[in-house]
Length: 229
Image 1 (spheres, rainbow, N blue to C red):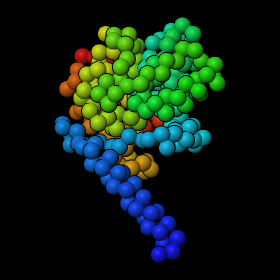
Image 2 (tube, one colour; image 1 turned 180 degrees about the vertical axis):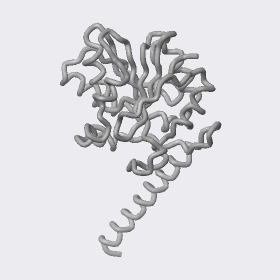
Image 3 (spheres, helix red, strand yellow; image 1 turned 135 degrees about the vertical axis):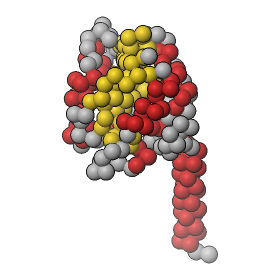
Image 4 (tube, rainbow, N blue to C red; image 1 turned 45 degrees about the vertical axis):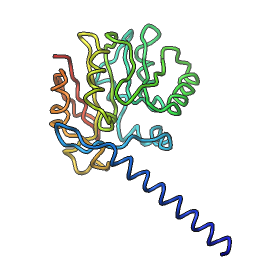
């Protein structure tokens, strides 16, 4: 057998293993016990550059989202699934030196890039937090706001996570979800990465949250603001 055939067989075997791994990841996520929604797989560190793509400004209008949410100086806020810090650093600028941002992720590689980005930008009010699929590991009772940007639909243990998030909020605290609109077939995102308002309410309200405001000013995403019951 020549070297080329050996190489092709090795490449084919590696590709098959990769495809099997992807299948296992999708299958392992399961479905939500209330809505039956397929839980989307978590984006790996290999997709980190996509989080910082220049097109994101036009596609998602992050500053417009933060304006609508109302993040102000002195607040203590958290982002769960912060990735490279695309939104967390914007929040750090808004809360200022008197405020604090807890930037959570379950992937150490993402947090390393986030720390590097925060250092380069000169932010000292950002704390990276390595969480778990069932616990963000944030301080209890201290958050004015917890932000989830296109990440809730990836929670493999959504009910456990919501209970832990609830514990981190102040009595007046808010949980804010940005999710791609499932109701809009023109949003160019895979269906498992979209959510409808009805789905979100059905899944969050049994965990003690109340939908207090829905904002539809973004190009592709819902802004869903929840308070504690």
